[in-house]
Picture 1 (cartoon, rainbow, N blue to C red):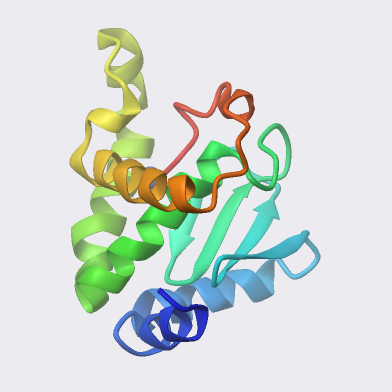
Picture 2: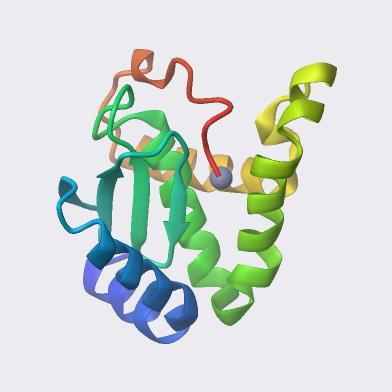
Length: 149
Ligand SMILES: [Zn+2]
């Protein structure tokens, strides 16, 4: 998908989450930013990841700019393209609950983060895009399993 079409789609069909992402982007304006295949990637001072429309947020330590976590979050941006205004109730809210409310359950039962449908789907979408624009380094994903949304 061409970047201009990706951004246009995020700013129309995906407007609610893109607007929320833009506000968060402005709030994190002092954090480092970089374009990422049409999206805008911010490294913020938190341990988790977040994707809102065309805005991706990943931790400012550990994961590098092209790491696996950013591809996962990029996968969420395609869920935004597909679901439009349904993204927040269908993906955003369940993902946030799975990330924050089931942390202890996942740890106790050794349940992988990607078991949850929103995360598995984002992984698949992100992996598909990564294969197209691969940076080639698989070692940069260490420790990312339990930190993403
Ligand atoms: Zn996720």
